[in-house]
Image (cartoon, rainbow, N blue to C red; front, side):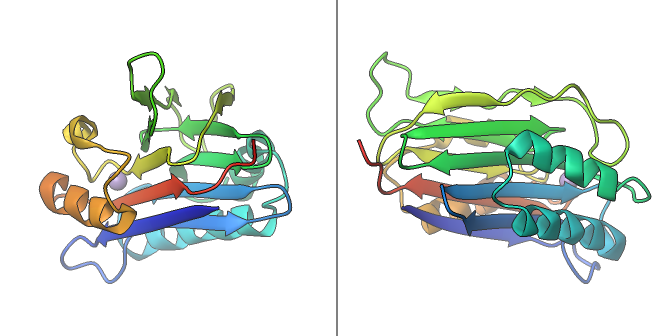
Length: 198
Ligand SMILES: [Mn+2]
């Protein structure tokens, strides 16, 4: 139902990345997340892994509930910023939501109104310390539509070069190579919707 690729950059001198991703199937769809633990190094990695585990363990819940749950569980930590999407192939719908600055872009495989690109509305805040009012957006999706998530170790102008045709893993590798800032961990997650029942 989806095909995805991921590329990661770990800041030199750090043992592991503070950025994590999740692509996980549940009964009604696919939960997709990119998470950036505040700061970098081991502590950031541990917080973002905790967030990923919370999402995975409750993947059947609505995404607003999931973010609230992460917020409660991460209160004693430095927190994370994250973007989440829930794809429902059965209904041809995607719900997405972002807190902080993990950029989200959807590239349409078959743009009908001339604009192939939609951007995720991000709300300023940190999950675990400053949760904004949460509002998720629901948009229709079609086969071939491709979702890009990139943490802030990737320069935001990456969105000018996206295509719904490029192989997801190749796209993730290319974006990381061309747009990583080099002074932060970086993660690019590219997910293509390969099937929608309509
Ligand atoms: Mn970062």
